Image 1 (cartoon, rainbow, N blue to C red):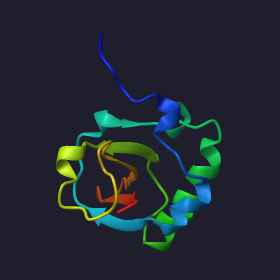
Image 2 (spheres, rainbow, N blue to C red):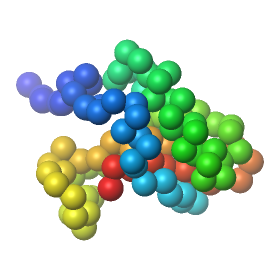
Image 3 (tube, one colour):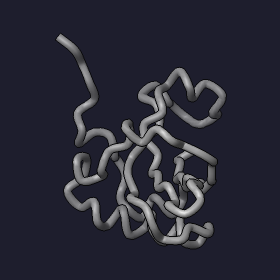
Length: 108
């Protein structure tokens, strides 16, 4: 038997909380097989995606690509200095089509 966090426990904050997240870019995140649609985790995914779009556009995103969730496991978070990261971090991600730049929203 395996254990996993329940999907409804992954996003534990309201959409407006994304306004406090850090936006950054990275070139190139080429393996998008491990990104998942927000609608699998929250029933009001459109509200979250709208705020994420606003944040990404303000950071220079061209507005193309699909916004999805990306999980970073806790053993990769050991250098982050923010609260309990024992469940890792779930970031919001979009990959710009034209140049492959990834835009990310992170709580840390």
